[in-house]
Image (cartoon, rainbow, N blue to C red; front, top):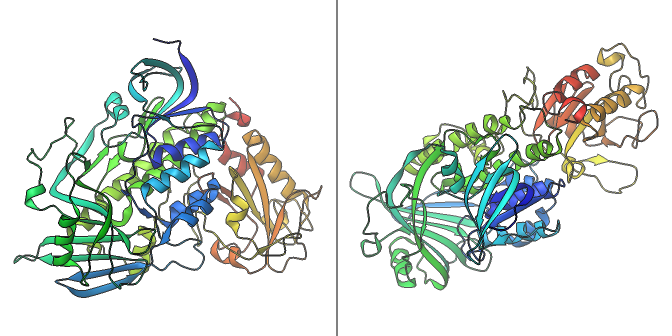
Length: 568
């Protein structure tokens, strides 16, 4: 075996989840290797739905433009029963949500992430498989099989398993993976059709048996390219697997069955039965048979080793929740790992990954199983709430050990997603900015919302230190506290009310960036009617909401995230 190499983090698996983890680590300066056993990226449109929340995450990462250029909009869905239209759903988001639903083939998602990762000097090591690992108090020793068949030993601080439903990392940790398999098999295909349905709409067409159960199904999701869709449908008997229900060697039956592939004639037969319009399928790019299971691990990590994405949770593809949930797993974990690698993390920070993300995984598994069996109407929520939940905009971490107690009151609370807003103006840009423009490519951000008197810790904020104007010492003291508590890892930005006389840098030295809430959207969406400090985490969630905002309260919050004084 060759000489042992070292790196800060090894990521096993280069799908969208592993690539997200690697990008997040590398853009924070963490050394990282990412390996994948496949010799090349698969040209399959497996996961295609991109949720608005994922686009927000990609915005923060600085790669959303590439995704928007490559994707097509998902405007809604038609549902048919027995060839008769039942319902048309339009995927409308509130105006303050910056992105809508989109469709993007998984191979394009991987390409975009792969190219973004390359900007940081890191490439996926293809044809390289994690064989086994052992961890101790100081790190993890990993054994890799290289494309030549040779073994390589890697010593790493942390190991992240994004290696799918049959995860070597999950098995090596001995995590349970409770759940079961659905008996049905499905066909997937990427084809072109010539119907006249509106662009950007998915299609769900069903037939019911005598007992009212679905016995025939066609689901079509639009893809880039005129008339292109990724279609899924039930497998005909002649293509059904002659194997036990739990066919995989590890007892987990989930994903593509690459030994069987339907042809264009198989797809056309289903379209002849279920298509809402007479149509002819053509130009098939790929097709496969796949099985679905629903499972989740008992914990998302152990010691220095973690799992994310399908390695942690699998479920029906209803609502395109799987890949998007995994991408957010990776985002949540990566910023915490980066602080741990730097020695700047509170000792309990990494444990918050499981505390925050496993409840999300449990909810997604339960909801998608329920929707697969009984439809989205099985949830009693109103349409707007249901749409926000499907968009993953209602994911929250209230009660997390690394966010402040939510408290009472309107507006987003600690643990909630930090909403976007528009209409922020500065002295130089001749156009209004969105809040997410200010957060892009940053880590922790301290947002100070102030008034003309008591802008930060002044008398109006109740701390007894009068500031007298927007450039008072209260702002500087809070910014200094954030800097010192985090070892310089928190940036400060000031949001001034719509009627403010100032529209530029504030503070004693006039160096704190400030923007005026000219449209009043920030005040409205954040329910900010008095001086308030908001801590926004690297993953776009509120860690704290402080009003009055005192240095003591701010330091107490950062003490749950960072090591003492932001260093080990």
